[in-house]
Amino acid sequence: MTRKIDYGNLMHSAMRGLIQQVLLDVEKNGLPGEHHFFITFDTMHPDVEIADWLSDRYPDEMTVVMQHWYDKLEVTDEGFAVTLNFGDSPEPLYIPYDAIRTFVDPSVEFGLRFETQEDEGDSDDAELVDPPEQEEPPVPPKDAEIVSLDKFRK
Image (cartoon, rainbow, N blue to C red):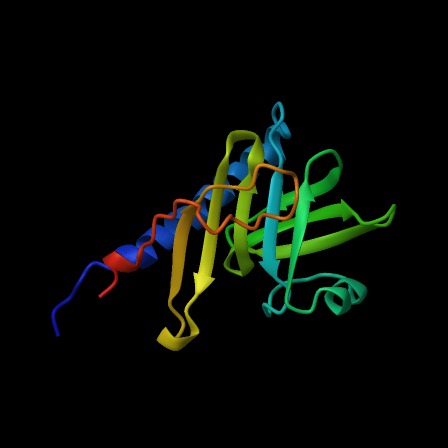
């Protein structure tokens, strides 16, 4: 079989690395200006660590907001830990990069969406998306311009 360059997985890895670099900067210097993040992740991912009451309430996915109050941000090569406030109750979370479904910074209209194609095995598609204009969980509008990586897959 002829060896091929897997651009889809390379882009996927690069986009997860971009999230890591952004979070490393925030860990070191804090959130600059109006920047803030909506991060939607798979709560059933085996390496996600959240309180039982959160996984009961969000059995599939959850969107967290890093904006005004967050604490103990620790960024690693595999994921990040952060303490967020849920109704005046600080809760520690650990989110591996592989569990992230969307990462949006609406202050600069930047967004990434990662989708798993179950009918194609374990392959992931990563897409650039236009984030929503309002401060709600990041669900891109149906007519958002999306750059799909499918054309780079074999």
